Image (cartoon, rainbow over all chains, first blue to last red; front, side, top):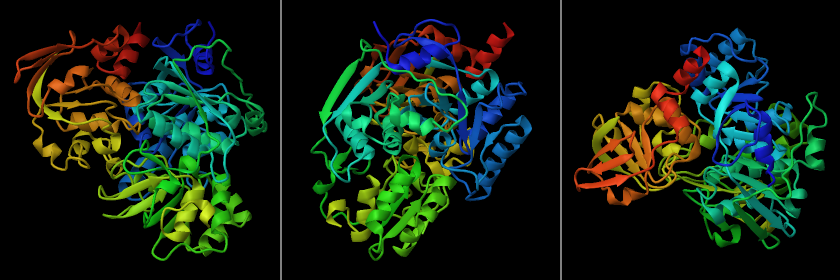
Length: 419
Length: 163
C-alpha cells in the first residue's frame, strides 16, 4: 500500500524511523518553527519558564512581527519588543524588523526559508500556506512552539488525506481563490476537519505559485491540518534560486485517500463567501445590489504581486466609487517595491486608494482599516467571521482580487467582466 | 479528575474570534483575556460565569486562528472544562498543551443551557445532574493523557528530558 505526499514528508521527519499511518501519534523533527508578534510572546515566556536557556537551532526559528506591526499601540509595541530582544539574545537570523518584514506566509517562501519537503510548524493558523510548495506545513499554538524551541520537535497525529481533483479550463477572472472558496462552499468549514487536503488535476498543473499559495492558505478554513500540492516544474522554477536544496516528495499511485472529490470547473465563475462563514459561498453573479463601504486587497491569501497586477488592470484610469474606502496592502517589502516599479502603486493611489506598508492589520480587525457598525467590506482575505474586521455589527465578503477591484469601482459587489 | 459546574451552551463552529477577538491579543494574561471571553457573540458572558462552570458546544469548536489566547481566555474567565461534539484541530492541541480539560461527545443535544453537569475525565463519563442522565464518551489516547497528567506539554517534555 502506497503513501500520500504528506505521509512521506512526515515519515522523513519522525524521530524514530519507520512508516506512519493515519491516526497514529508521532514525534517529528521540524525544519522551521515560526511565530509572530501575537503568538511569539506567549511561546517565549513558556520557553523561559521551562528553565531551558538556549533554543535548539538558531537557524530554524523564525520570528515575524507582522500582525500589529508597525506597532499600533503601546501594548503591541511591547509585544514586538519581546521578539526583537529574544532574536538578539538567541542570535536568531530570521527575525524581520519592519522595513525588512512582510506578512509571514508570503515572506517565508519568497525568502527561501521554506522549501519543498520541509516540515514547518507555525504559531499561526495560516501556516498551511506552504503546502503549495509541497511542504508539510501546519498551524499550532504557542506552547507547541515553546516545546520546539527546546528540542526541535513537535507531536502530531498523522491525518488521513482527502484528494481534490480539478478538471476543465478556468474562465477569465477565475483563479486559485475561487477554486478554494468553491471547495469550502461544497465541503463546509469542517469538511476536512483533522485531514490533509491534496489539490491536484489538470487545472492545478496550470496554476501559478501565487494562486497555489491562495489555495493552500485557506485549507484551515475547511478545518484541515494542511493543504498540499505536489511539486512540479512551476514549483521547481520558484525555488530554483535558493541556496538550501529542496526535497521533492510525490504521492504513490496506490496511496490511500479517505475521500476523493472531482469537479469540472470550466463553468465556474468568481466565487464570493458571504457573511459570516468562509463556507457561505455564492457565485458573484448571484449577489445583487450589495453595497460596499470598504474594499481590502492584500493579506497572506491575496497580497502577492500577481494579485496586485490583476487589481491594477481593472483599476487603471478608474476611481473607487464615491464613499468607498479602498485599501491595498502588498504582502512583503519586495512585492511593495515591485508594485512601485511597475506603476501599480500609482494606479491604486490615483484610483483614490490607500497603498499601505505590509501588515496583517486590516484582515483580523487589528488596525489600518477597522469596520464601523453597519459597514460592509469585500476583502481578498481568508476569514469573514462575525466581527472579524471590526464591529460585531459589520459584514465581510471574501473574494479574489478582480472581484474586489471591480467592486471598488462600482461601489457594489461586481463581476469583473462588467468593468 | 471530577469537574462539576453549570452549563453555558453554544452552537456549531464557535470560532476563535468569537472566543477572544483579535483586538485583545495584546495581552497574554489569562485573567485579562477572560474578561472578554465570548464577548462578540455573548457580551455579558464573563460576568455570567461562576468559577467551575462548563461550556457545552456543537461541532468544530475553536475553529479559525491558532491563538492559544482562546483556551487561555476560557480558563481565565473561570470555565473549568469544555464539552463539544468535536473540536477544531489547533484548538484541540492547544487545550491539551495548556491543560484545559475537555471531552468530545455526540450526546450534547441532551444537555441544556443552565443544566448542572458532572464530568469524570479519566473514565469519560458525563452526568447530567439536572436531568438525571449519564453519557459515556471516549477517554483520550494514552499519549495525550500523559501530556495532560504531566500538567501540560512543557512539563511533559521536562519530564522526558530528565529520563
